Length: 621
Image 1 (cartoon, helix red, strand yellow):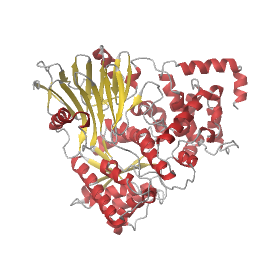
Image 2 (cartoon, helix red, strand yellow):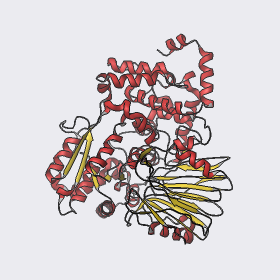
Image 3 (cartoon, rainbow, N blue to C red):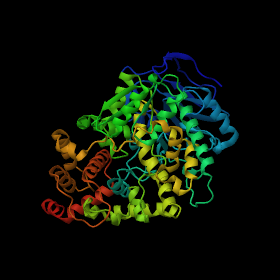
């Protein structure tokens, strides 16, 4: 295998970079030096398979979110081209080209042997070559017959794709895929975003742009795209016999292994510490295995950091006990007018937090540049929802932000012409998900939690940080999740067995109470005190494109500012006014960036036929 020649220096590793051509085979690749402007993009694999792959890839790369840093490694061959940014490698052998980005458990960062091992495994086992592998990674494989996209078991490094007459394209961000061809807006997902602050798992606002999901891999062959699934993501439905003591030991062992494997692998790690069970378990596990806890770095960010009983206050007490280097970052939500556009692009606008957490980009930059943090450990809600008390299917769905449409109060006012098509399409999507999940309230709850909330919300909340920090989620480990799913419902609910693990291993630290509240922003209160943010929000709401009804969302904002109580409306599921206006604002950015869609055209025609502007205002007042 020809590897090229060493010629330039890489800004990320301070070592030599390969720049040259693979002339002995079908694929050529090169690693570019950083540009003079220091432009770097979100880590991941971006590429095209099709007749004009090179030209289309160049167009896509121009839309990747730019930040300072390193160049890209590129591969190209007959009918395909890709660019790799981040940690990974490129290999070709026996007519197969493989590109890998990310990291795998048990291997150090930047281990070039990983790509070789992956290619060996694929040549030996085919599509099932990743069985037993864990970590956070993407793998692109090109054979003479087909193209494959593979991910780690939880799909932690998000990957979007779309296909058309020009071929298939993929990217860690949505914006590059929008450059390839116009795409209609998906009405069901527009409606779902207003209801839940996120899209249905595997979807975006664009009807032709999709997200690869946990347990899936993609096959592109003869112009056809197929999403294939391996393994099961359903949870245990029966109570059955259950050895609590043995299972507790197995879960403790798996948790410790998952945390420590990633800790020893991480570069300049810090622990995102709160007052909750997840982050405390992570911290105490690491703390008991290091000789000097004063060398640990813990991080807390939020609003009103000294509020008694809050996440930040509890984190401060824990950090003080162990003498860690504790970094407290106060959120600067008043800077949303300056930070929203960057966050929307970095997060691809996939959740409402593109607005509500827009300042976190700045916080991540400060951690990296001022405090020398390279990796961030955080706990995720991987054990299902807490505070469970639903007794009906509708209650389960509402708890997961997937309520039946008829239960959503006021929804008929949000879209032009009552949005009948969009709401009907959304209802069909909800019912399809219920039908595909196991019966029984607990099994439905936990299966849909893993299928919907984790990939459609949590991964986006983590991955936008990746251009500054590598994010580790040890509780999302493949073995840990499998053990959690296999628990009887009573032991899954409210993290019951996980909490027992904590109590058994870290009982001496139970004297520090768990947090009673988060340090999140009270947006209703904050907006009433921040005219700048209100003016920014109002300008976006007033300019909302069809099919959103601007007057309705401006009215919601005005009522929020007055502190007016919500009026009586049919429906048991109510979206808080501050959430509704932020969600509409984010959707407005999507729609303004998007080519005019068939749905928007229909909405405009419906509005024009319905009434003059003054009458529309009156109707929705």
